[in-house]
Image (tube, rainbow, N blue to C red; front, top):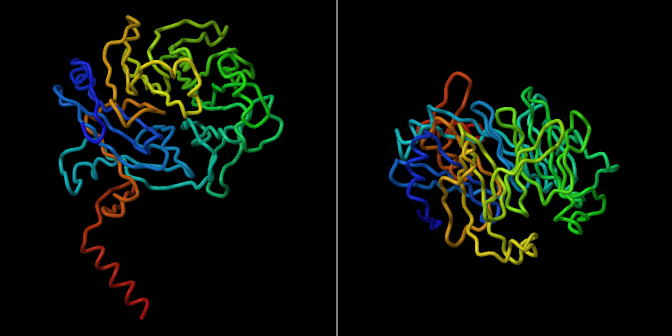
Length: 361
């Protein structure tokens, strides 16, 4: 399990293999994206370096990832996956970067594909933004108490999800504050869940809410400070506790009757290191919850270097998934079109080099 030593419950490999997918983790603390795969007996890791990876979104064969100073867009190519140069016929999916939107440091958290394109939570400027390739970002929505956009993370806006019609619908934040870092003063009870379409606070006084997600018409939210997965009535805001999970929980994904929850261990030097939860002996990892029984059924947890997880996604119908970062694409360039995809061969590279030399002459 190098480079990160991990342990998992005996049933974790069997469950992941039975579900037929891969679990993807982002950890900004170590600058890694991790793909967890199973052969029914063991769990294997594919680990890639990225610059502060945060939220990830999927739409069909597209994927977007929030990084330190950009949003990177990827496309899954089955052709590239099956012919991966060093390991052909190994991967079921391969996400290759095809575009970037340079944002500067906006502390982007969740990202989601919507009927208005890709939307990101711009935590620094306390707003939702979209991208059209002409600006760092285009402000799209801000909380009603935010009157003027300015950097400084006033309310710690962090989570977003869309509804059944792909409308931007629910957001989470830590406080209704307008001063830079103002949310820190009341972070255990100042959080809220807001319904953008109805223009109302659906739930308030929440303990550090993260990861709002709609699944099978039900609205779920993680209460990170109290370690709870809850379900929120979309009309009344009434809250139902599903389960309490040990750890600072953040990152939520669903498949069939299972919920996959990211768990973090908080360092004392961390922004949230003064929370009571930070004094508990914890491990970062992923827990799997059966929504029918409301019980934890499997988990994987890391022993040492990996302490904090931001996002978790279950990628279905792909037992082994590859993702390419900048250094790998430099070593293995490829072409992706709507009609075909292929790796660029050394012969093609040489032809390009000869042409460039000729043009210089």
